[in-house]
Length: 88
Image 1 (tube, rainbow, N blue to C red):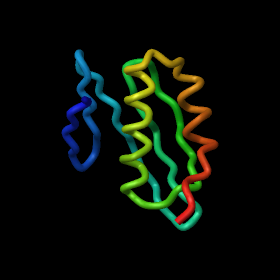
Image 2: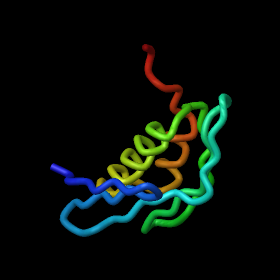
Image 3: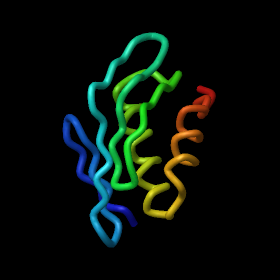
Image 4: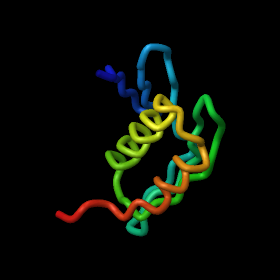
């Protein structure tokens, strides 16, 4: 299990060692989300067609899971930027 602590401006994903994944300068509109994402593996600019603050939190969870699994940051970024969402 990955216990989490959610705050207004960051998501803390805590596997065996602490991994902080947070966003900076988020922007939300009907076209999606834009934000800087900071991780222990580096930073990247996120542009996503997903909308809403809750989806930004979901993206941070996914990034934290990828880091905990040892995936390269480039793969995590590419997956998050191109994720189309789920129907419904």
